[in-house]
Length: 328
Image 1 (tube, rainbow, N blue to C red):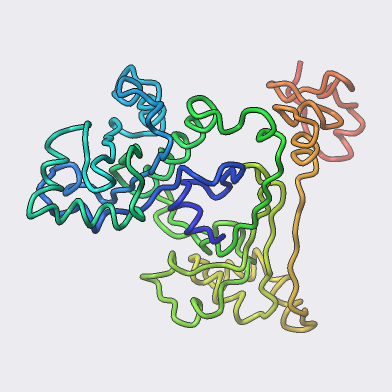
Image 2: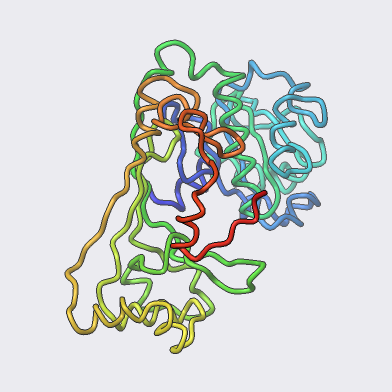
């Protein structure tokens, strides 16, 4: 599954696939411009289909006290808009009347477009709408999806909890925009090889649309491994660093050893995968935290009770390292 598919459908780059339902769809084109203010003014509108939604009462879907709505609010939403499919899968009921009326106007043009975008959900399906920036919508979809599966629908009860759902997530973005720095930064690291087709047509305006040759291994909604194909040519590495805002002088100062090695000695195409063994063992052991399985667990204060670390350093060692201790 690609990163883009995972984020749009499940709101997470490490979705739990032990339950394959609770999928969200981008329905912006279907509902925008229909006369409902929230839809019309939202940058993106996403809709999650809950086929088993009959068991979830309206009171749980209304903010601020509804349990499901509270999950969306905790993820950054202002509330949770919902409605239900009825009339043999051709009409809507419940939820805010203005939204339904806007979709049913013009002989139901908006309604038909919405239901088509959702793959014609079955009669009785619950529809949950997330309206806002894409990043916020993803957070809401992910949080609500996990809550519904575990707390409302029982999708992880019994044998389902012990199943192993393995997933490769690929085609991560090469960069992301850092608001604080005011520029693009590498999503993984600046040595990740880009998708060659995307790189050939890149520009400073569309750099964030370039995919990378990075991949993650996901087990039951937990990232247990990750890696990438690396850049192995000097000229591409320089292009990558330049795209991230490095000057020639900064490249030489910080990465001169690497650039020289690639130029003078070369490297074959190569990649890697780092496994999170502690996370994998925790899942296999049914543990809620990796602290139950790692060899030397740390407390919340980063101290190691087993070996008594951190502890005072020998003054002779500090002198050898040219360090000064301010500890009294």
